[in-house]
Length: 192
Ligand code: IMP
Ligand code: MG
Image (cartoon, rainbow, N blue to C red; front, side):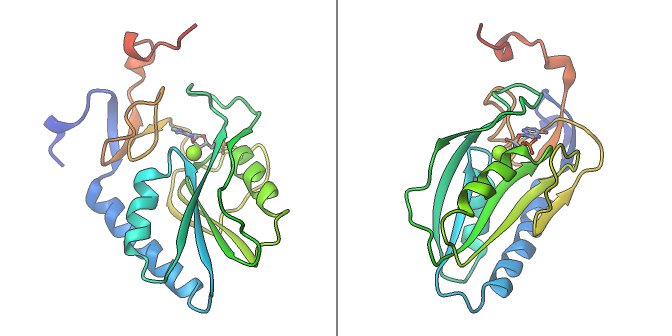
């Protein structure tokens, strides 16, 4: 990729647009195969990080499906996990009897997805599976996604393609490592 175009708040790009696109095509094939006999498939995106991922995935999946969203707050806009998770917005749909695929941007400690998964498991879905674009497996609670786009074994803070730093950088079409020189940057300073 043309590094001159790289956003200054990125230290390096890990997965560029073409690489992400190709992997999402493979994930869409996984969805079509896994749910070929499903009568009612619903993709549940975990906002807001799931947006670019879910949009691309949903467009590539050929199996009929609906989509819905859930918002869980965990990081609170900082580069560290707070450890406590709140469901800020619940699903609009009833998932009983449906095949639910939760679509996450990234799993790290497992705390967020564990909380969402526990909640949805109380609602009599036919099945519940979890797909994450990125797994950064530094778990505080045990959690294994059913399918993963990319695995990152280094504890780096990532931004781009849905992943944010203080709500910014989600719009970039690639995923990369946040440039820590900008941690104290004025526009990203947490509001006190
Ligand atoms: P967990 O609860 O530690 O598994 O973190 C899950 C959530 O934290 C994700 O849904 C993201 O919103 C956020 N998160 C975790 N790692 C990163 C990262 O490297 N960059 C941006 N957000 C992250
Ligand atoms: Mg998320």
